[in-house]
Image (tube, rainbow, N blue to C red):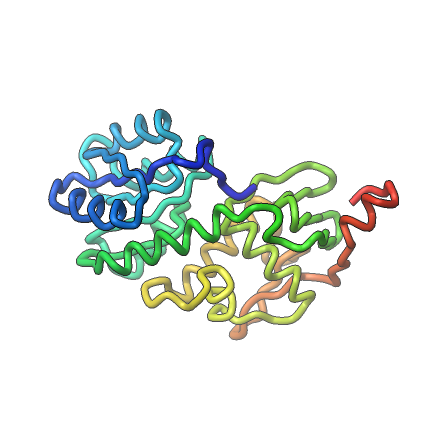
Length: 253
């Protein structure tokens, strides 16, 4: 299910051991009327996530006490709070590693505060969508079902927990009904526009995570197929069911 904060006034958590960066990020976010809480190390960050249930975490990777990658892993094990990594480790390999651990986006230092705010807005738009934002359609591929309006995924009748980004990726692939989607097209669908610092390799990471949660074998895919040199597509024919029509008839959606 997409992440929804427990309270509409949930803060953004900013985690960095550099007080100047914390102050800078806080200033720009508060100008946009986002409430902000802060932490200076990884241990404090995990406590703040538990205590404040933030709507988003802006996270440095090189932290004292507990490093940022460990914070991401523990946060992902306990919930689905969106995470924007803000780090001096800006090489492509570092970005892909952060994304593979579960971060939603990665902005290398030095950074533009205006770009950081824009990325925060993008993540929140994507992760805090309400059911009314999606059509009343259920997509069916084999034993996989995606109820777009309720943001619910079932596999063989069992609910599967996906992050907002993974759910959006699956939705786009099923909606395309077998058409091949390039990595650039998928980046556009996930972020609203191609992000300069989110590489094509990030899509491969997202697909890998989605496959792992669906138990899908890339060598014999049932749900997501790779088209070498072109992109990805749904691995079979996708059926579209009108969820509301089924509910009116008393049929399972």
